[in-house]
Length: 324
Image (cartoon, rainbow, N blue to C red):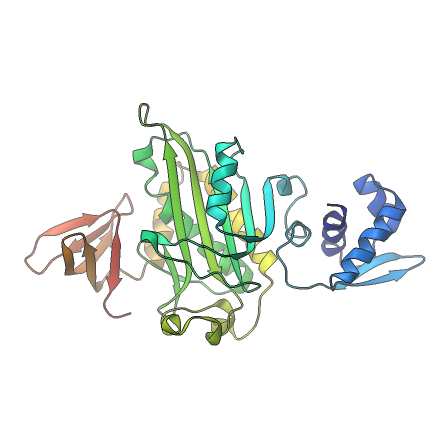
């Protein structure tokens, strides 16, 4: 939309931008620029205007529109970013787009999810105007069996994005939860579609939910002792569009790095993982088993030693850290 493009241009520049420059850049009339500025002001943006200088954005609401993300991403990258206000699930929306042939790198970002999904069939609480709910499409030329570590790679990528914007370096609880001080900050859900005959991957959809500006009372009572947000951790709010754009950039980097940079991602994952060296509970189909998490393997599996001395390499499922 025109107003999103105008907002992106204004947000990318700290000073004034002339109406002529905007109209020339977007190939629209000066009247269309004026209408876009008027619409942005009605949405709460504070835009100063000067007859000789043009327009200057001094403040805008914390939103996840195409215009807001476009302030932090190149214009051509925004062609593969769909920003929505409310969806049932960003993974479900992107799954429909993937089925219709969406290209690799397509992202869906939402301000709210009404039926957000977590691992193992759990709900992911997705309150409006507070978090980032983002899904990203990969189409790697990799056998399905080799793509199991994508989730762990994603934990590294999202952790990098969070640190680059906030200065906070989250921990990783195996396999894919980002935490701060033992409380969950971010969940990651990967869903793969592949051809059964050839074993070739059709698509991998990475779903990411990050708690950004929630206060403790914004979480359901049963989650207040186990969940956190960047606002709670840092004592201040963060601009969600900036962080969402950073996540997209890091996922683009992941897509370019896969699979050749495995060693670098493994080193980063091991450094961030707080599960190793601790007593854990392995939640298996035949019951819970206590053990000790010894190390993260070369394939990002978790080696657990049980009280009877035997070891197991866990590649999927649920593991709880007893001291968290």
